[in-house]
Length: 101
Picture 1: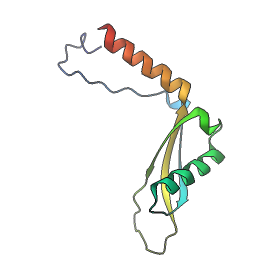
Picture 2 (picture 1 turned 90 degrees about the horizontal axis):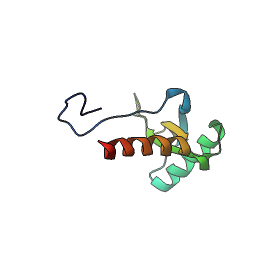
Picture 3 (picture 1 turned 60 degrees about the horizontal axis):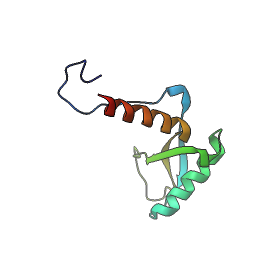
């Protein structure tokens, strides 16, 4: 693709089909411990994601609060998940294309 576009860049960006990706904003109890936060996010995600969490690639990001208050016990977290099999498929396609050019 880069060669046919006559682009000098060696980097490209790809995305997964939106219909195959699960995205939601959840509320998670605040904690300063990264491991506890990861477990809390996974626990909440299990309730929302239609497939077993073990079969999903899950990433998350704490959302910035518009007006943070010290007494707030919860924070919003954006979660995004996709089936690991689909992630592997698209990763292998992009690797193959990179090596075949």
